[in-house]
Image (tube, rainbow over all chains, first blue to last red; front, side):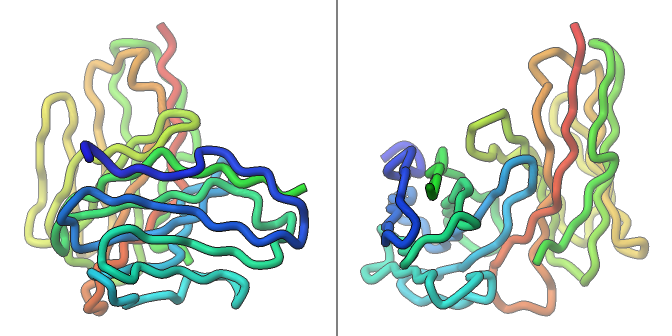
Length: 113
Length: 113
C-alpha cells in the first residue's frame, strides 16, 4: 500500500474485554514500531520489530500487552483484560532500514469504558 | 520511558514570525529526527540529522544539533497558520543495537493568522 494502515481507526471496549489492533506497514519495511499516545502527550514507545523478531518490548506496560509480527509484515498489538488506563491512541510506524525516517499510520483510538 | 524533552511545551506566535523549539536528550545518539503531528493525525517526518552533523536545512526548516550539550533546535522561518501543530523530536540511542525511536512530550505550536 501507499502508507502505513491501521485498523480499526476507533475502538470502544468494555473494561475487561480483549482487543486486537492491526498494523499494515509499508511493503518491504524491515522495522516496525508501536507507540501509545495519551491525550496531549508524546508517543510512548511500546515495542519494536525487525522483520519478525521482536527486538525490544521494554515499553509494554504490563503482561496484558502482547505484540506479534509472525511473517515480518503485518503486526498485531493485543491488549487483554482492558483497563480504563489503556485508553489512548495506539500508533504504528515502519521504516525501511535502521536510522531512517519512520512512516506513521493514523493510529487507533482505543476507549475503554 | 521518553528520551527527549522539548521546550517550550507551548508556543504561540503571529504568522510571519520565526518559531524555535528545543529538544534535550539523555544518552548518546546515532541520529535525531523531528516530526510534526496535526491534531488527531499520525506523525509526519520533517528532518533527520545524524550525530556527526551540526546543522541541516530543509525549506523553511533549520535544525541544529549540539551533541556536547545533548540538545537540538528546530527553527521554522516565516511561519504560516498551516504550521500550527505539535512538534516532536525522536532519538535512537547509540548504545542500543536496536532502532527503537524514543519521543519527547512535544511542543504545541500555534501560529495566529
